[in-house]
Amino acid sequence: MLKLHFAPNSRAGRVLWLLEELELPYELNRMNFHPKDLKSDDHRARHPLGRVPVLDDGDVSIYESGAIVEYILERHKNGGLKPSVDSPTFPAYLQWFHYCEGMIMPPMNTIVVHTILLPEERRDANVLAQAQRLLSRALAPIEEALEGKDYLIGGFSAADIMLGHACFMSNRLGCVGDDMLNIKAYVARIAARPAFDKAINA
Image (cartoon, rainbow, N blue to C red; front, side, top):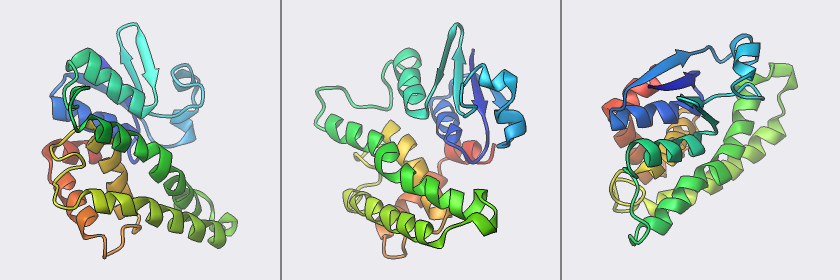
C-alpha cells in the first residue's frame, strides 16, 4: 500500500488530494509542520532535508510533489488525469503542471517566510512587497488562461492538482486580487471538490 508522509499546509496536500481524487488506498503518516517531526532522524532518513511530501511504495521511496504526482499517475492509474501525448491539450498540460513550481511557489515561499515563519523583528517589508508583486504578475497568465474554462486545460487534470493547490494557497494568503475573477471562481470550484476538502483539512 502507498504510504504518504504528510504535514498540513504544505505541498504534501497536493499528493493527498490526488490520492483522494483517484480513490487509491493509502496510509498516512501525519506529522506536525515543525522541526521536531520534520528534522527528526527518522524523517531525515526519508528526505535528507527533512521536508514533505515523501511517498513510500514498497521498495520505492520518492520525494518532490510533482515527481510523486507523475509517479502515481504512471504507476498506479495508467496515466489517468493527464492527456495523451498526442492530445492537443498535452503541451498546455505540461506547461501549467510545471508553472506552479517555476513561477508561483518561489514568491509564495518568500511571502510565507516574511508573514508567518520569521519572527516579526526579522521580517523585511521590502522583500515581502517585491514577492507580492512577483506573485501578482505570475498569477496574471493563469487568470487569462482560465477565461471560459472551468479548469486549466478544460477538464480537470493533474495540472490542477499542482497549480490549483498553489492558487488556493495564494488566495488564502490574500494574494489573489478581487479583479482576478477567473482565479477566484477556479479556487471556489477546487474548494468544492470533496477530495480537495478532505486533503486540505487532513
